[in-house]
Image (cartoon, rainbow, N blue to C red; front, side):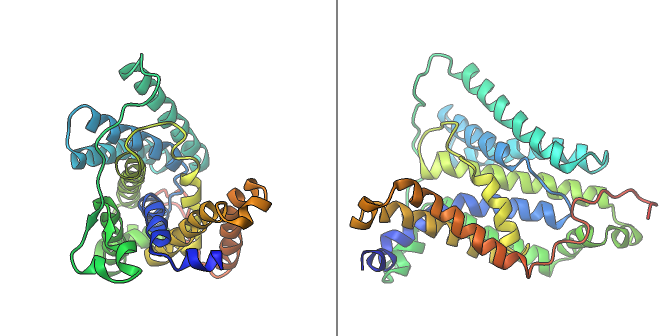
Length: 314
């Protein structure tokens, strides 16, 4: 009954949506990269860099939305590095991605210590505050969960619809999907596979950085290095869970976030007193792995994912 009460509470679903928001940004970014044929394992480090860049910009005196833009630009810069090394040069996407993660994480640590050498605890900023949408926020259960969130959460959901429209309703989306499925056909149409793939990685990396910025500017009001805490790797799994489709990826992000929010609340019930807390901590990941196994059996991987393309070669 305790678990049922939790699942039927508006506060639970509000927390799940809040936890899912950074995952949505980063999952969309990874999805765009992989749809174009590039696996971006730099996602974890890019999220850390975006979290720091956005927070530092606001701490330095800029507005919150300016901080979001700064985070996105920093993410795109790391995406440019990744795309140059993997697309025209054709280097291993696994090695480059891990290298970008290490580069982004270490450069963020250096920048933090350089900017705040004497600080023992991270300074706080004024973060985004929840904004209740009139009338809609009064809907029982659904209203407080969906329509009383921070502006960045609303932006995350808007981007899901926007990315879906671009991917499936525009020539640009068709070219991007074709670059990940059959790049030779794209080249035969006179389009640049290199340009499309590099653009996808750069834009996708910007989205990943926005996911990191959500953590420092919407979920919390300060920066610390452990805050990303493996979310980037989870987003790579969510892309597979969502079968490389934005709508299903959104569902996967919310599902994982619900598992996470549930384990936090169950620990506070009488059941939580009798079970080691480590069991609850691992539950969202175990359930996500099981869901990933089920969904991935039906997923169709982009045909040219991780396959370098050189014009004129077969």
